[in-house]
Image (cartoon, rainbow, N blue to C red; front, top):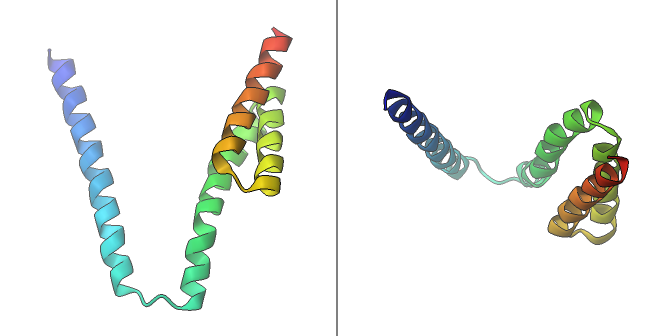
Length: 101
């Protein structure tokens, strides 16, 4: 029972921290004037976060993961559709792994 209470408190604490970080971000950005330079930085932010998350996994992962990342990147560059790119990347990685096993 105690483990369940600790897990519940941990989940509620993470939810509160997530919410507060989002609210604080909105509040801080309300104070920052949106110059063209700031707008350009904000537009590039999502892509840089994605690369920061995907690149270490791709470098440490197997061939299937690398093929999936390459396929997703190519489709994203060609179409600009992030959802289709992610679906293709997962399908390529899963397909490669299914053929290898």
